[in-house]
Length: 327
Image (cartoon, helix red, strand yellow):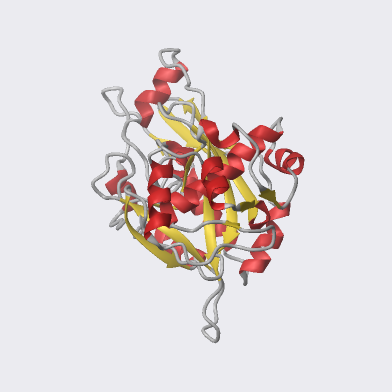
């Protein structure tokens, strides 16, 4: 039975063009995506659930694919220091594998900002040990829309509201880079975070047609059955979350996760093209050449079986791009 791995049919041609020197690899843009988690209701049993978005099925890129809220770094995410709670920027820079405090702030700010833009959840509060509660009012929505339109920087938003960014509510979990043969590339950090008490997720992304809270194991099983369309980073992170019984256990485990970037590799074995993600053998694809010299690629629909289809990384670009597409 086919699983729900998304695979663009144009990849073989692009891979061969890159190998032949006919295609230059684009520089990846930095991005962040967040796996929001919540514990099950008391007495219901089971482990934590993760918030996922489904990209609109009408979209040309990865239509119907499930992913997490996320997106690219805004150049203004590091243009000035923001009010900050949690590990120091030097600590974050070391954890994320970047060279400066400004780079670390930009990535963490992108994670918090994109989560607010796409899921309506804000990891910030009036003080270092508080989180805002109800943020559903019209004035909050106006600010969110201004952030989406880039009419307002995240630093300006925090200053206007008198808020402190709660970096301590995030845990860095993984890092994936879009393959070199993709025209739009992202270097994406994946974070975990608990849904703050008093806040609720909603579908605030224009690129998603539905949202769902789902157990990581259930989502991964849906992918295995070919019912849910996903890209490799999404599947990999879902499988990694599966063993944990509570959100607290996930957050505690974040510090020990390997953030070595995962980058797809392609090689030719005779007429066959082999596409692989080091350390993630389940995603390896063997693409035989046709008699006419072209490749028998499979598109999103056939790769997913009956895929029923996670904004920016959400399913919007960043996370999607890390797996090999735009995000």
